Amino acid sequence: MSNPTLLILAGDGIGPEVMNEVKRIITWYGDKRDMPFDISEDLVGGCAYDKHGTPLHDDTMAKAQEVDAVLLGAVGGPKYDDLDFSVKPERGLLRLRKEMDLFSNLRPAQCFDALADFSSLKRDIVAGLDIMIVRELTSGVYFGEPRGIHLEGNERVGINTQRYTESEIARVARSAFELARRRSNRVCSMEKANVMESGVLWRQVVTEIHEKEYADVELSHMYADNGAMQLVRNPKQFDVIVTDNLFGDLLSDAAAMLTGSLGMLPSASLGLPMANGRPKALYEPVHGSAPDITGQGKANPIACILSFAMALRYSFDAGAEADRLEAAVEQVLADGARTADLLGPEGGSPISTTQMGDAILAALDASL
Ligand code: NAD
Ligand code: IPM
Ligand code: MN
Image (cartoon, rainbow, N blue to C red; front, side, top):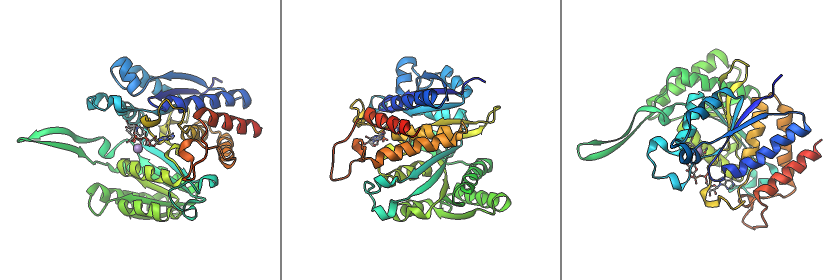
């Protein structure tokens, strides 16, 4: 049987820095666990624009459709801020999500015990936290038409449209219910049904799917603004949160601070199963290209490394190996390894991106 295939798109800013550490871990799995992957690499985002004049070349898009999983670092940066919208680095990522139809974006927020004191919230509130935000990723206001900026009379108007079909809501709801069954069996759906028709439909469809197919799962509904407040007031009340594209973007960045740092949060973007039974999949950290620390060896590679752990679990049926990698991360944090973003107010001496990779590789070796 041929090896599973990975396309690595490291992207811009700290993307290549954190992805370097992931590449070492992939090599470790090939050498030490007899799990070789066939890897190809390509460009996405600003670096692709610099070379091809587009943030995602058609050939790269075609490759992404063929591989078993895509690993992405991050895209964007101030150099590209003034580009036309159609060629901005972020459009490359959005095209991948849309054309691969990656409708279910899993953003777990787990607080490792060693970091409970580094969250901006009190230890009691975050210790032991383990929630899963399921963000709809291919529709909503990110993609709805009409959109654009045009003139009405002598005034400019900016337009985006929140639009959801019932099948788009139903499929992401199913994915949240399925996950809940393998966790603590609770789903909280968040929208703004009090002010948005798309929110009314969202609540109706989630309720119908629940009644017909998942009555064994506990379902609750919350307005997303209250949800944001509850997420920082008492995050442990949640198990799985399912929400739309924009609310999911905001809520997951907020959830990041519960875990200590945005540099800790991985994600999996999953679509429909391919012919081989694997879901179309892209794995990426929740954070961006972090221009403020690019090139300084300060980036925390853990979010990107944990994204590869999610690939092991969701694309390669290697849950035990994902557990091994997550345990290695937990171990190095317990041993006190800290990149700069993980230092509390009392400071301390941070290690570099590569040193964090070294520590995780050593913990993996020790796990054998
Ligand atoms: P950002 O996530 O890049 O950075 C926010 C803050 O978190 C910065 O202070 C940064 O230094 C810190 N940070 C982020 N990741 C870190 C890590 N791994 N280790 C240590 N510190 C880390 O968000 P931003 O500054 O709003 O956006 C910068 C660029 O990234 C923009 O162009 C934006 O569009 C893009 N972006 C891309 C993605 C993606 O590729 N998925 C996600 C978010 C933002
Ligand atoms: C994310 C990012 C992206 C988003 C951008 C870079 C397109 O913020 O992955 O969370 O808004 O979805
Ligand atoms: Mn975001």
